[in-house]
Image (cartoon, rainbow, N blue to C red):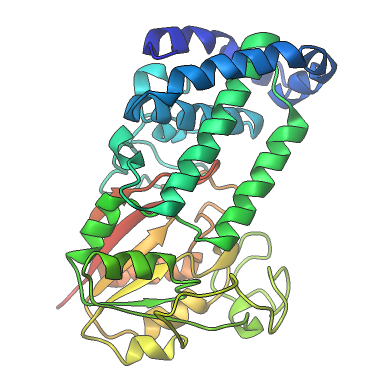
Amino acid sequence: WGDVGRCGEMWGDVAQARSCRKAGAAWRQLIGRRQASLEAARPRVVAMYERIEAGSLAGGDKEGALLAQTCATFFLLLEGRDAHPLAHATAYLPAACPLGGGGGGEAGGEGGVAALEPALPSLEPSLLRDAGLPYLSLYKSKVALWGGYLLAQWGVARAISLDETATMAQEAADLRNAHAWSIPTSAALAAMCRHSPLVELAAGNGLWAKALLERGADVLAFDTEAWQLSFAAGGGAAGGGEGTAAGEGAPFTEGEALMGAREACVEQGGPEAAAAHPDRALVLMWPDYGGRGSYGLACLRAYRGDRLLLVGEWRGATFGRRSESGESFSAEFQREVEAGFVREELHRLPTWPGSLDHVAVWRRRRA
């Protein structure tokens, strides 16, 4: 298991997904026809998983990275995105990744969207060192479990369980809602600390703000306690297009609580807090659910400072599951940022299956 080449051999039949696509069929359909055979092989799958787990327990960064990218690869295959230009950007160890694409963000997204500039940095196994970050540790344990188990299924039966992958996807969504939409790393937090003092809007339960404070940053964090339907309208959209009517396709109902219990560092406040702190760099993380809405835009237009720290996806660096602009910031928000600011830094983050999160640092353009 520890040998990258051997791992690559186990992935040899992944090419059949592309053969299916050329024949006008979905790989998922082929896998669906193998579910009964997979279930019959369950004891052998468990034995294979135990071998994989035993081989990775004493491993270091490389073993954890292999399991994380294995998990990501299977989900991309199921979604039919294995040939996406950015599929290879999910690889920590490119030599063990069967997917195509330019890697490192060299290719743009689908639909003619330009590649991100500067290019999306490559993932490094060292990003997975938790260094006292419980959410990162939880992420590592989950993707190691999922990646190892899916690899065992594939190795034994040349199939993976559709029911179990659906359960994994739902658990990932639940964990993001409970903790944070993006996973902090020591490197990303250190980069953000360099731009302290900070003001974070849409801070959720304060997981990132607390981690920044623990590392010496000067942070003010704000969020509203409940969903405000007024911010569901406009601002670009997946599905409804820009200017969507309030409430149409909204992920929550008016007054619904957001993200549960909060850290003490999070204060009540919305976009108006951005106007009150022009002397601080503005931090925004996934302010527009599903890439639609106007919360992020309201914060941006209220802010008069010079520095943005934006966490999530961006057009040219997303798999476009709902929108070519990604699921973190509305299309209109992204256009206004690109018109008024210059992107100076990009820092990759580990991501749950299907996402391409990063931290971007922007500086306001001055005449």
